[in-house]
Length: 142
Image (cartoon, rainbow, N blue to C red; front, side):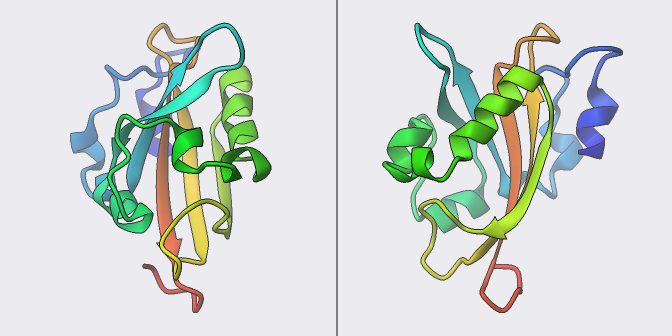
């Protein structure tokens, strides 16, 4: 979150052009990005980038796929998308550590993640950037 705060223009959200993966290269295997796709109804979320650790835990590369399709049925039931909508509406970063509730490797039990919004115009959230770490049942990092 410190990096996100450091790249934010005064009084605005940072955009993708301010986000330089080289500045957080050590975190990139854990990073995933969602495009916020607006249409007639509520926004949908599509995987824009998926780090190697995320590909490993999801057991497939989901780049370009819709979040709710990848996590069919569970995305709505778990409230995960409510978190995304809250970020889009409130323009705030979020943090969570708890049980894995979406489709992941069967032995990954705990997830810790921080999610931050990006806005190309400084206001309207168009990308959500997440950094997630998965843990085994005993608490060691997966």
